[in-house]
Image 1 (cartoon, rainbow, N blue to C red):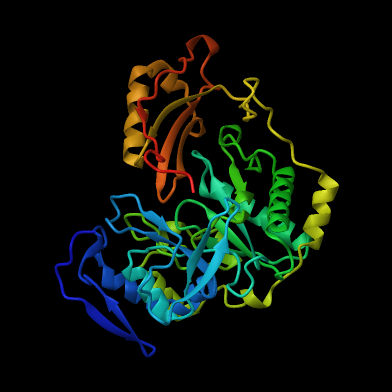
Image 2: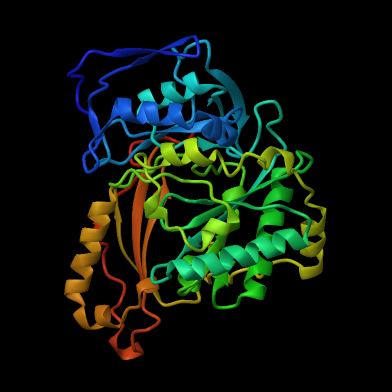
Length: 409
């Protein structure tokens, strides 16, 4: 974000003093929303936002340079944090650890927004018990070419699977194209158990809705389906929680829904400008979520019944890496999504005949987590291009190295 041009505004939030720097800075030009507007939004929906993110360690996803620049991810709490910000130390599989931010009240919400955070990214554990998640997260991620009706159909099948196994799902828009279903569970299982339960749920949804839904982890194998993303339950993963503002031009919000609303409402309806009035008039549709904690026993029993998930074949080069079953070529690795899309367009111009054969889901532009920010990988699946017309793997149009100059921890 640009240097401050207006004096800071001091807010009294439930007895805590919160300093908002550059309050008039426009963050969302399209609806004309300023930084102070975003703070006031979170204060208006604080009860719901804290139901999703309060009391949990979170990664700070900071848009310090504005929406047009990639955010950076900050695991460690800033050193000079106020007394009303709590912390918890998480240990990662890599052997590293981080003392992460824990917010517990509306003042904490205002403070993280002032740091440049738009969405809230909490872990699925409480600060008091970092080893046992109390939330299973179902992320319904549509592939390109998938419409809202298909996402909704998959959501109701996921709800059915959950109910058949003694669990309650609470839907919300992701704030982008998909849906999230949150499932409160008793904090009695490890991360590995929760991920296995989520993977089992995904496999069962695919079994009940073949072609509509998929549990295939490898993107090029999904086709035009809804991916039930079980890996969002891995220990190092976070997702945007309820009432989070997403970094889209219309300031869209990840919004809790009732199941009666899921089929008829659309993600674009819910923005910073519309959600506060909705919250005032109807309250939080997820108000009862903490009273609905269930057991994973039935899903884990189903996991034993289904047996291990199919593993991808390994390459023959001795590296032990997965060998794709699809004719993939890599086009570029870039620092920003704009650069990724430009590289894709360059490739299409070089190979117009092959490009004309591609289906929407054949173009794979993936945001990849680097050391502290996203980078982008562009690949093309040539499965719909006749064999004789398939371009060979070429030198990458762009070859960004997100780890250049960094040493291993």
